[in-house]
Image 1 (cartoon, rainbow, N blue to C red):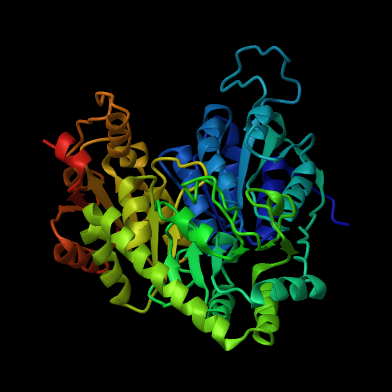
Image 2 (cartoon, rainbow, N blue to C red; image 1 turned 120 degrees about the vertical axis):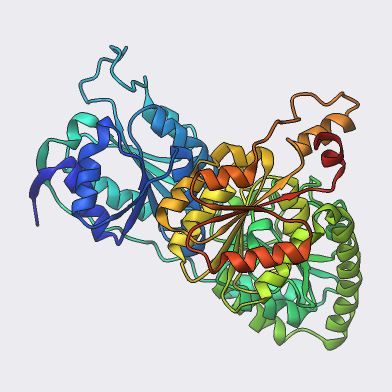
Length: 544
């Protein structure tokens, strides 16, 4: 076995390179200089964000569109904690991001002595969010930690992880061996379970499929099952692009609509595929479900959460859905499928009306994105923020095609996600067109990453939808009978701010002008910020 004697930083670079990692997102600092020196020497590309939270969101966006582990590197203490919010987002949305950070020295006094960036127990802070946190005890153990962490991240349900390297081990040399990661094969569907589930849904007249981000890669199989059953398909936010929103089978990403519990209550069978059925995705909670619930998931613990499941199928979405469809095809009567189609059509019409009503303030935005998507065959990735323009507007109003993606911070609901996630997505999938959509309030959390996009030459658009502040919170205050306070913001001149950072910045009004601006931006090197104003009750109150 190879027992190469090199520094802890070199062991890290060697192990990452062996695992196929070609890019890291991170900021150099006093305690991680040897890491960055070794990463550069290994030919690993370094993307420099302006804040560690931005690094985490960039890695998250890249991981969502590739399905591969992405890496962020921070320095000690405040930097690692800055990244922790982004890691929380990745954890709640099941995204494989690996944090590499120095920690206090092995010999650091337990009660501290005022060392730079000192944190009493950094690993404990990380462990409060992540289930996989390793603190190494020798330079050579770094390689083992990389192999073990990636083995966990690439097996079963993807989750973020962290490796803490005591800063006194980064620069000293020691022997170490590469430990290639191992990925556990996803469970195959069990024939008896498929047969039982197929029999349970074969006679249903009102079947409903609810698909989540865990079903990506199984879009054709989900669509085929819906055709066989005559079922409607409801999507979680991050499942947009799994199937074509324009298809007759697709009811849509309607998790924010008040009619959703009425729809699920009216169904006589639900097939949940790769979804947590979580309140952060399906708001009107608790989500009522019928007596027959078939659930396909790779996480046995999640299988028992948020639903009383009558037919659990612990297997990968693609294989299990294909097997279920094959079996149902032999059992399904045409009159049952015809009845289901009629039922689906009624709910599709009701959902379309509700989406149009709720999304009216952002109709121009959704229309422009739909037309922009259809103007070219390349996929469109929309990196969203936790803002009304996205969850009431784009999520329901944009007609995504199969292969498009909606990257949305559903679980943790963090602000400032859209821009850096879009940067990461574009770097990871340069063939795709990328548009980030953020509110004026949330955009200020990470607006500095526009400079990072300029430096990296990232061609993408950031649409800032301006309602004068934190519009959703303002509405919630008013709905409670409170006088809105602390929500009206004095914003910058967004186009001028973009120009000051080296990007293009323009203001437009209306769907046609927005579509033209999106199209023009594709011919420009670097990012374009497009500022639009929101015609909503919040905007009417807060915009001067």
